[in-house]
Image (tube, rainbow, N blue to C red):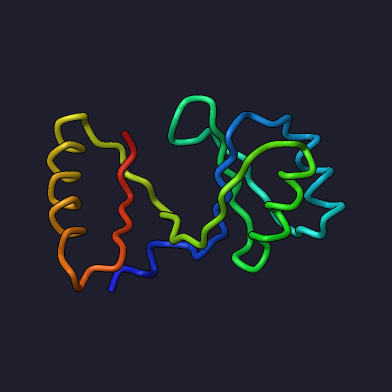
Length: 113
Protein backbone atom coordinates (compact mmCIF):
# COMPACT_ATOMS: atom_id res chain seq x y z
CA UNK A 1 0.00 0.00 0.00
CA UNK A 2 1.14 3.53 -0.74
CA UNK A 3 -1.47 5.32 1.37
CA UNK A 4 1.29 6.84 3.54
CA UNK A 5 2.10 9.06 0.53
CA UNK A 6 -1.31 10.76 0.64
CA UNK A 7 -3.30 12.95 3.02
CA UNK A 8 -7.04 12.38 3.39
CA UNK A 9 -8.59 15.81 2.78
CA UNK A 10 -11.77 17.55 1.78
CA UNK A 11 -11.55 19.02 -1.72
CA UNK A 12 -13.98 21.75 -2.79
CA UNK A 13 -13.78 22.76 -6.46
CA UNK A 14 -15.03 26.30 -7.09
CA UNK A 15 -16.29 27.64 -10.41
CA UNK A 16 -14.44 30.95 -10.32
CA UNK A 17 -11.59 32.56 -8.42
CA UNK A 18 -12.68 33.97 -5.04
CA UNK A 19 -10.71 36.52 -3.06
CA UNK A 20 -8.68 34.52 -0.52
CA UNK A 21 -9.31 36.96 2.35
CA UNK A 22 -13.08 36.97 1.76
CA UNK A 23 -13.12 33.18 1.52
CA UNK A 24 -11.11 32.85 4.72
CA UNK A 25 -13.51 35.15 6.58
CA UNK A 26 -16.53 33.21 5.27
CA UNK A 27 -14.88 29.91 6.21
CA UNK A 28 -14.13 31.08 9.74
CA UNK A 29 -17.69 32.36 10.15
CA UNK A 30 -19.00 28.99 8.91
CA UNK A 31 -16.81 27.14 11.44
CA UNK A 32 -13.95 25.76 9.35
CA UNK A 33 -10.64 25.24 11.13
CA UNK A 34 -8.36 24.79 8.12
CA UNK A 35 -8.26 25.74 4.45
CA UNK A 36 -5.80 25.99 1.59
CA UNK A 37 -6.80 27.79 -1.62
CA UNK A 38 -5.00 26.78 -4.84
CA UNK A 39 -5.55 27.20 -8.58
CA UNK A 40 -7.97 24.70 -10.08
CA UNK A 41 -7.25 22.01 -12.64
CA UNK A 42 -9.11 24.02 -15.29
CA UNK A 43 -8.73 27.72 -16.12
CA UNK A 44 -11.09 29.94 -14.13
CA UNK A 45 -11.52 27.47 -11.28
CA UNK A 46 -10.10 27.17 -7.77
CA UNK A 47 -9.70 24.34 -5.28
CA UNK A 48 -9.97 24.63 -1.51
CA UNK A 49 -8.48 21.83 0.58
CA UNK A 50 -9.92 21.45 4.05
CA UNK A 51 -10.42 18.82 6.72
CA UNK A 52 -12.46 15.82 5.53
CA UNK A 53 -15.21 16.60 8.05
CA UNK A 54 -15.44 20.24 6.93
CA UNK A 55 -16.40 19.79 3.26
CA UNK A 56 -20.05 20.71 3.80
CA UNK A 57 -19.14 23.68 5.96
CA UNK A 58 -16.65 24.94 3.37
CA UNK A 59 -19.22 24.54 0.60
CA UNK A 60 -21.62 26.71 2.64
CA UNK A 61 -18.87 29.34 2.97
CA UNK A 62 -18.24 29.25 -0.80
CA UNK A 63 -21.98 29.45 -1.51
CA UNK A 64 -22.25 32.51 0.75
CA UNK A 65 -19.84 34.25 -1.64
CA UNK A 66 -22.15 33.38 -4.57
CA UNK A 67 -19.81 30.83 -6.18
CA UNK A 68 -20.85 27.40 -7.42
CA UNK A 69 -18.93 24.51 -5.84
CA UNK A 70 -18.59 20.73 -5.73
CA UNK A 71 -17.09 18.90 -2.76
CA UNK A 72 -15.50 15.48 -2.37
CA UNK A 73 -13.21 13.64 0.02
CA UNK A 74 -9.90 12.91 -1.73
CA UNK A 75 -6.43 11.53 -1.18
CA UNK A 76 -3.99 14.36 -1.87
CA UNK A 77 -0.35 13.58 -2.61
CA UNK A 78 2.20 14.67 -0.01
CA UNK A 79 4.96 14.62 -2.66
CA UNK A 80 3.73 15.54 -6.15
CA UNK A 81 6.07 14.57 -8.98
CA UNK A 82 6.72 16.79 -12.00
CA UNK A 83 6.55 14.78 -15.26
CA UNK A 84 6.94 15.65 -18.92
CA UNK A 85 3.92 15.87 -21.22
CA UNK A 86 4.91 12.58 -22.84
CA UNK A 87 5.24 10.79 -19.48
CA UNK A 88 1.93 12.27 -18.35
CA UNK A 89 0.10 11.03 -21.47
CA UNK A 90 1.57 7.53 -21.16
CA UNK A 91 0.59 7.28 -17.50
CA UNK A 92 -2.90 8.69 -18.13
CA UNK A 93 -3.40 5.99 -20.78
CA UNK A 94 -2.62 3.35 -18.16
CA UNK A 95 -4.89 5.07 -15.62
CA UNK A 96 -7.74 5.24 -18.17
CA UNK A 97 -7.37 1.51 -18.87
CA UNK A 98 -7.39 0.69 -15.15
CA UNK A 99 -10.49 2.84 -14.54
CA UNK A 100 -12.39 0.75 -17.12
CA UNK A 101 -11.98 -2.37 -14.95
CA UNK A 102 -15.07 -3.29 -12.93
CA UNK A 103 -13.06 -3.91 -9.75
CA UNK A 104 -11.49 -0.43 -9.70
CA UNK A 105 -13.38 2.26 -7.75
CA UNK A 106 -10.95 5.15 -8.12
CA UNK A 107 -7.31 5.91 -8.88
CA UNK A 108 -5.18 8.61 -7.32
CA UNK A 109 -1.80 9.71 -8.68
CA UNK A 110 0.93 12.15 -7.72
CA UNK A 111 1.80 13.53 -11.17
CA UNK A 112 2.04 17.24 -11.85
CA UNK A 113 1.95 18.46 -15.41
